[in-house]
Image: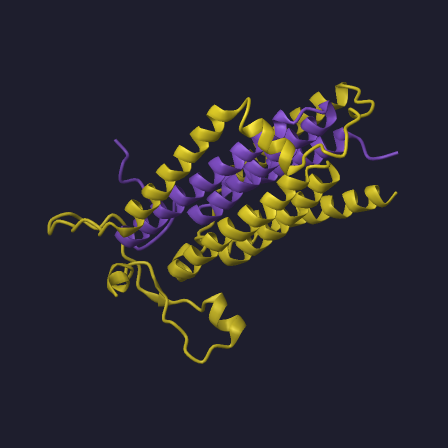
Length: 212
Length: 101
């Protein structure tokens, strides 16, 4: 009975947090909501006796990856906000139909099967020892590939983030039409009641800010 | 009597649909990346559910590899977003048409 209650609560939290990520339009709120979603998923993993994965989910995802997101959101300031331009209504409708279609396809596919009850597993299922035995035994190649992938990603991230932007030619037109710069109240300054507010100027004034 | 495996798959499908909707409708690349994260995690939930259902631990190994791939994707994606923001000043995936042939 406790199992069922925990499952229902975690499902509600996971789905509401995911909706908040998608619908809020503010990357700061979206990142925080995704942390809630990830922790709810870690609860599912514990219910499925995958303790090691639940710990890895909280440490790696909710910890490291989301902190990186929050840093980049803070670095970009108001420029990372969702553009306020209105989209055509049929675009939203088509996205809704496509997303609901894929979800419904999975649901109907699963509903046709009859899942009686899961396999009986021992206490050691999903323990770090069991996962490590798999990783360093049968899936050693995947393990090594993962380490190479992470190394490449780290080097790529450094290269992408440190390279100076290429100078734009004098006759090269600006790729965006220039809007009059306007001051944008940032969430961070309004929430924290900070005394010093950073001037965030959008659209057109973006090039001069990053020199520091 | 516990909730069966099909309920976990149901939640996984709903989360995948929400993430897909976000990828289709949002224009801020940061929120696009967050939506992709939702989809990857929905897949992880399905992998781990079936891993538990079948009593096979291989699914958990796959889920760990998916986590590593997601972390790499975030690093490269955020690096690209920062580079684009420095170059263009404005982030809107509909207006980043510099590579259009």
